[in-house]
Length: 247
Image 1 (spheres, rainbow, N blue to C red):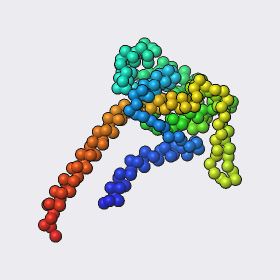
Image 2 (cartoon, rainbow, N blue to C red):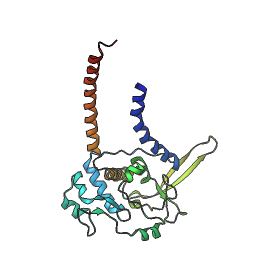
Image 3 (cartoon, rainbow, N blue to C red):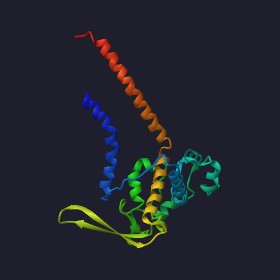
């Protein structure tokens, strides 16, 4: 029984970790851990601002409404004045103006909707992906990505990170994993710490957008587990009382 309970407790953890490890091995580049702060409203607001300025031009979030941003401390007036650049209403979903047909012609594939990208890809993958673009003259866009080789998307945040080059060094002698050597070609408007913080905020928002009620759900789950723990004590004492005379 103890082994069964232990296996049931570890099952969700295994399911959560396995896809991350699989994605890391697919590209060959090790994923960095995303330092998320899901309760940091300032970080979420900063991420929302970056999203609408740099991502929403090509990627939509058609299952997310602008007015849900009131959950992260923004008023409808702030959303309307600072985060909506089209004729959309505060209650509308975050749809992109670029038609899918035109996007496919420009990039070779229509940019995916990002509403649940945080849940499908994972925070660590997104955090690593947005920080590992490099210049590649062989790519149609002039960019490539260490975490997502042959990516169709150009580096839309390059003015802030600057241009970088990547050299992959194969360890053929010891058959070990390749080494990745980064070189800064041109500086960006942000230093490394500032850029990583900006990406952290963006990923923080993307994860929030995939499940806006995640923090509340987890808090309710903790309360429910605490209640079940107390109930288990009384249930166990009741079971002992019922069976104390059974030999």
